[in-house]
Image (tube, rainbow, N blue to C red; front, side):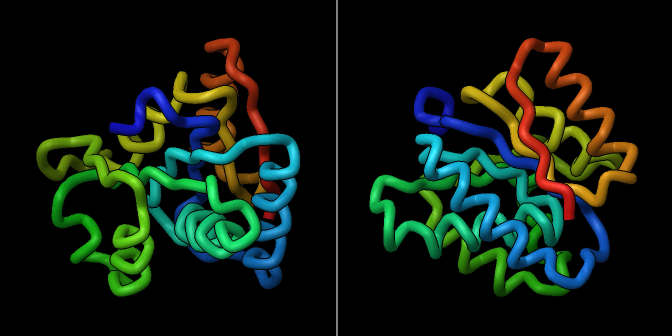
Length: 153
């Protein structure tokens, strides 16, 4: 289980990403490694967090101690995603795969993202600066006295 090893939680905006988001996310992930973060609990509820997970797996070539633990809304959620093959490739390389809910709920992705608060030294939020859900989660995390890092894409 991921609870004792996580350096940082990661949540990403759901929806369409801007051009250049992949490069920005990869660069930001590399910066996190430079400050000593190595193990990430990633709520892969959308493209931004999926890109972050893929970046960490690429960076693993330079930092063999890099690791990801994946948090998914519920068992079967990936099967409903248009790019389930990418999600499955990430999951195959993760140290652990965890489900935030036993079954599907209307707000399963929100529940999943909220569960990151309190894990590790910090939480990273990847968003466009306008996503209200991500901004609210960042504030809740700050209120819990946890360090927040934002990757604005």
